[in-house]
Structures are given as structure tokens and as C-alpha cells.
Amino acid sequence: MAVWGVGATWNGQDVSKEFIGYETATIGWDKEENPKFHELMAKVRPGDLIFIKARFMMNDPLRIKGIGIVVNTKLCKENGYHDREGIKVHWVKNLTDSPEDISAPSKYGSTHTLYQEDNFDVIQKIVNLL
Image (cartoon, rainbow, N blue to C red; front, top):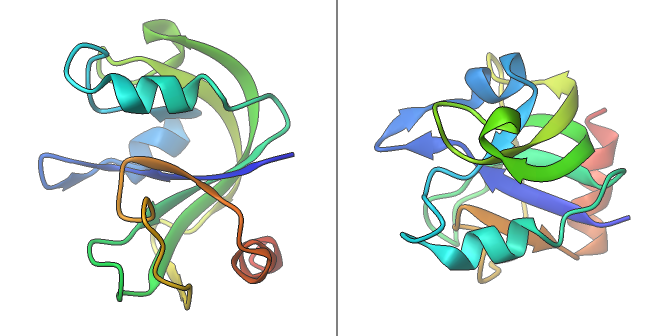
């Protein structure tokens, strides 16, 4: 099982509640605009843990807005939101109204749209929020 962090800020607007409502984790970029994130999303597997995060600077805390389990990894518009490709997620914990900030080491990728979290302490903090 892998653990993934996904951002949900599109053009300055927080779409975390939409992700949870539509049971999705969606990339806000077309494949042609940013193929790197589509390639990364293709590595996500059913059963992986995924969390909605916000982190604008690497020295900021990691803000957790939702935690879920990936259930369908077919990257398509039907699984997405707002005519973008996404995957299906069963969101177990909705923290959009009261996000939790956790301390996490600065890590390249943690400020990006999607990244794989591999720090045991960070993963444990996320699991403890469930």
C-alpha cells in the first residue's frame, strides 16, 4: 500500500469539498498541460491511502483536509470532477471544515499537485487522524 498526497487548489479556489462530494481525486491539469502528474496518478493503486493536502511552501506545516482509500484507478473524466480526469476515492475522514496541520519534513513534491509520501512519521500522523 502506498500513501499519496493530492492538492485541491485550482486557480486559487479550494475544491476539497468537491473532491469529497464527488468521491474523487482529480488532477486539475489536462494531460497535455502537465503529463508528469498524469504519469504519477497512473501509479496509484486500489487500496492505497490518499489524503487531500495543502502546502504552499516547504517549510509550512502539511495541512490535511481529507483522508481516503482509493477504490478505482481508471483515470478518466467519469471518475473526475469539472471535466478533468480523476480516480475514485472513498473518503473516510472529511476535515475540510477543520483541517489538521501536521509537522512534516520539507520534501520535494509535497507542495505539488500529487506526490507519494514515504516518511513513516508523516504517514503515522495521517493514520492517527482517522
